[in-house]
Length: 543
Image (cartoon, rainbow, N blue to C red; front, side, top):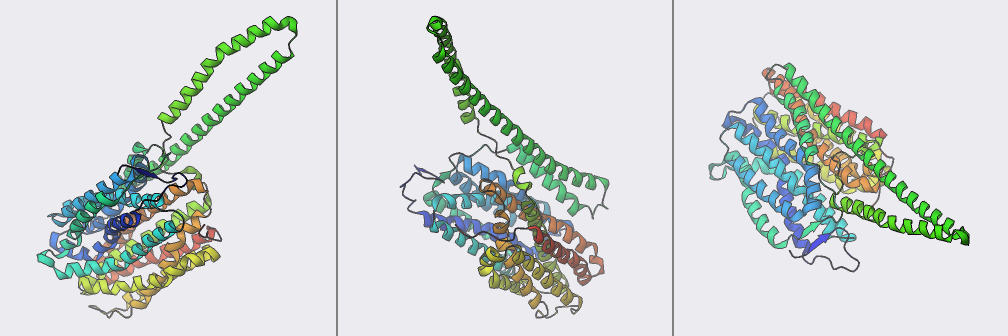
């Protein structure tokens, strides 16, 4: 494109004429990521049998993707803001297609896990560009409609992901089996890339800061260091290095936050000092002018000399000020990855923790539930996918009204959603305990799944809106990025913790293993419900 769109276009500027076509292309690309979060869960047992994968390998199939996404998401959004979203979007689409091809032809668990990690990284490159481009291409009511479309597609993807995974695995197209779950992305990526070249405009921010690349590497290393011992620790007998690694990861993330907070404080102090210096020079100039005006005629020559000296010195001060301004323009401020001002707000910090716990329970449950259904109950992948559609049906019942309820009742809606999820998964837990040894009927499990899905709609849909109502507008962009990162990281942790508990009891049978894992799932949602009491009383409506 010859023109570059910015988020705040000049008054009277015409909107991009092919914006809805571009939005459709970008949504199809985002759909690949939204589907891949869940589509793999139903195929995991088949992957394990075909590649002779270990139990920790199965956990990594979920965690590697989510970790790659979480570690890359924030910095890729900053890169798109600064250097342009179109190029990064196309790079993300191409990378995701190639990584999907690598997943589909993988011959060993290690190859598949590595390709899954690359899938997560490339998905994190393309997804922020979609949302950023929407902010630039659309304004007013159209922007709300575009983001509403994104939300609807995201909900649709979560509903069909598990079903599509079972259908593709059972269909065994061209003898590919589970590989078709990944290979289906390749033609979609090729078509999306070609359409993106023709339709997606170049967009960027006018005043975007400089991405913190070193900080992003430290953040990625810290997140991996936390999850690695959770997944590998059990098979290695929980060695000392695992605990050291986990503690080091936590310290790396906390240390990054502290460093960025201090860097921001120093920047603020320098800015205040520069402002005081400017005011001081202005006051000195006013004082000089006053003294010159009050001087006697007999001191005219001396006053004239002082004014002349002042005029001689002034150009140097002006040059220094201009140089300082040029330096500020040439060296943009580094954008923090973990905005300290947001974390100082209790509502935001607690909201991130709720998001984290919610994702731990969700991803952990669907990993072990798929293993129990297929490994313990003899369900086919398609049968397992059809059963889990009950969960998505519950979410469709409450998602359309969740935001409106949150504007009126705020944290009460979120707390009710978390309790419904705890109760629904508790119902499933009870059904598991009373299940037959092989192929128990689906109906004892369906009510619990529907109930948990209804809770998902009330908790996940309005959570960001309610929490961001307590965050100043200038921090909202960075805060929403933290929420997305917490969601992906929580999913990786959930696959690590809940999966480890499940496999620790696998020798007792699949039913006993799932029964041992379920208290961690239900307990996480109970704690989330309690934490919702700290969140704002009301959400915010649309402006």
